[in-house]
Length: 377
Image (cartoon, rainbow, N blue to C red):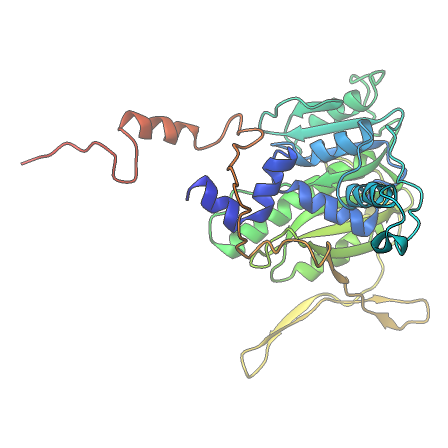
């Protein structure tokens, strides 16, 4: 598929290049911020699975450079347009224009610290500390704590941040195989790895945002996150294709149980329970179960926690679509404007996994019918 064809079929891919974003996923974070105000009073952020860096790029522009992006940029543009129209004079068509309010304020924030982590190399960004590390390995914690606080001594056994972070983001996903059950399972394990690392550095009241694949038994994952976060919401940005199973889990107000200490040496989800870690007796609950009805429909019982009066309670994570309804539809084709010129990506992949395949294809003379194939008898 050529660049012009892709520009037509993926509006956010085209907009990302026009606005200078490294990837179209930047719009997903911007739309999540419009709905949940993720960047309010935030100065310390960790971006997991960050490559190629579009989410870190959003953080750099908003927190470090103080730019207005997303809906804030639209409000700023509208304010300037109202001022321009009112300055044209008291013509009849401009007399009824509303008085423009104060312009949106956007100033660079002080003492901002942003750390991006990924196994793949990432091109540098202004004000971003990039680490090439494995988020599932315990050795990553000292590297992260050192990046957050240069005075941290990695020889100590402490795995807690002296200055905890306000926001942890994870837009990571596995290389999909097409086997949906396998892809969903691997994604859930990646999310657990991101969560275990976030628990080590997130401050009480902090926010955790991560990509998920909605599939069978995903409600169990929501219920487990609800143990350590007060609010858990499943969100689908407008820029995320409706045909995709991806969504984003937005967990707010981090509230670790008493006595709980996070550790990648003994992560959650590996036979470790919050009740045991916190020194509390396990709470009696109805265990999850699954049964198949006569009509072939499978029913999943998530289990329940008893309240103080013995009544069982159930909790279902809310699902919220975010993003302006007037925005581009990620699944639709859009007419290109007159004189449209297709642009190159802002930041090509630094170390794509298919690089070797491309080199081998070039040696053979190309592809799509251009490969030189020797004739045999």
